Image 1 (cartoon, rainbow, N blue to C red):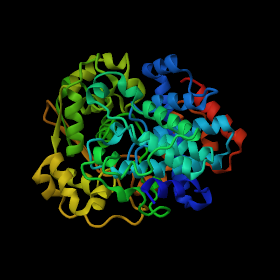
Image 2: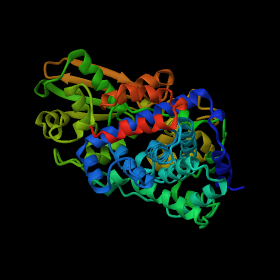
Image 3: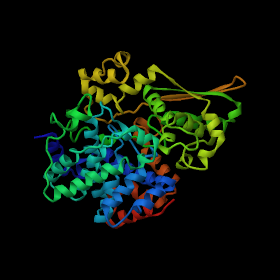
Image 4: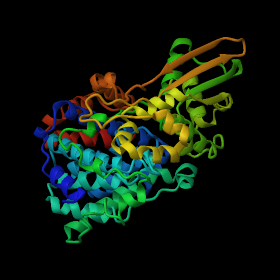
Length: 490
């Protein structure tokens, strides 16, 4: 059997009783977190423009709904991440749209979300050691949309294989100029969702895609991976649950900036807002991953005229915002906040420094890279050398065998923020694992973390209560939850 045939056979027959309760709990939180992301996106001018162009989040046509939801939830970097990828922009939005249209109950919705997570994460993981990761790995949403929809429709495995094959015959190749330098990032998840849903329609009408499109010498991995990991697609089905590698975003911004924002929030909580005129400099010490993101976004910054995608990945702007206000929200990425001259004066004093040990820890932990490096084994140095050169190969060293389960998965994206005053005083905070990121605190605390996120976007407490017991929700309760959470524009 091909990779897609194995994966489709497993995912198309997955039932919620097959899934450990701890994994189901992650999926419940993921649904509520993504509803919060949609609400935040709707409150931003770009989200309002999306709805002006394509309509509201819930429409009679579920494919149109899924497209709008994907366009509302990705570009603020308020969506959740996993090993591997930003899954929820397809793995939640598509099941939500089809559950609403088809009248599914909570068990069916959660089953579709988990099936979609496992398919999308595994295919994304197979190409993680390549040119695209995170939001820019838009092919993730081909897999998420196909599996999310077809599990809602209880489609047979053969249709999954053909739909996957058709979608991955024409995968997206995003260009950084558009994603960081314009509003194009708003459509970065929505466009592949549309392709995936079209592939489902085509497969349903009898069109066939190549079952070996992932591993064929002329196929997807040959083009999209520096070090292909075909084994990641089917490794440990039913044992390695990618859903429990989820990290829940508590504020917009990223990738890799969460710990720095958390540090700035901590400093604000202790001493209140800083006065930019009293600050000599702000030093953000972090990993190579965050450094690279910062370097790329810096070229697209232009003060208040900066594209939202550049602001959302700018360490100086986001850290300055958190030091001045105590946090970062969707409103901080729009006027009048971006017109605040004090933020830009403080941002100009932010300096980002590299810490070698932080880089090592970010690369050897499970998410976002460590597990891929372990699966690559002797092939891992090829990618590490391409990313950073021989010193990075030496720094990472031997990473050990792949994980049998993800029950103890961690996402370490460290940062240290030091605010140095003109009077010689210095205040400092450090964080290894950001709030909400995969790790021990999130494993036990994610329901409360996500509930607070949803309520902070204006979501109703009753809706959060329903989501907390989603597997028990009737079709009517699911529909009411989605109507309440998504029809109200914040």
